Image 1 (cartoon, rainbow, N blue to C red):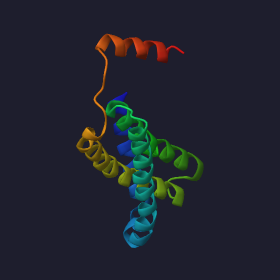
Image 2 (image 1 turned 120 degrees about the horizontal axis):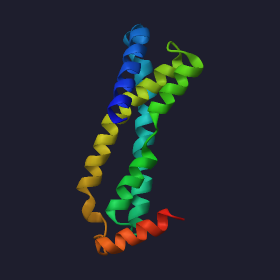
Image 3 (image 1 turned 60 degrees about the vertical axis):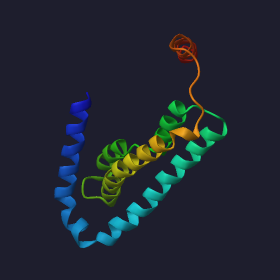
Image 4 (image 1 turned 90 degrees about the vertical axis):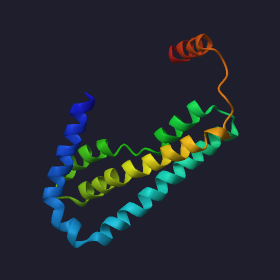
Length: 141
């Protein structure tokens, strides 16, 4: 479903931009005022989770994805809910679109940060068999 969901999201964005293009162009300050808190929140949650992972000595392979998942706002779902409940011309739909547009570059920056700070974390221990055994037993409970 990867390509279908991407195409669906892009079509949704195009439809919303076609309805709200004037609002976006005539009120860029509104867009900035929506984007700034979203960006701050995403960075803040990422660093709280990432540094907590470092504090409890998680391996980078666990701490980085956990921090990314925690920082993600799942705007794709928010767009669908906003359009379903309030329509394509609603301020809620506009806010979620701004969220989608800001989240992608912010998450790419956070991936870069996580990759560049890999050395902060202990090296992962255990053989592949041990890791698979742990994964199988944890995921079955």
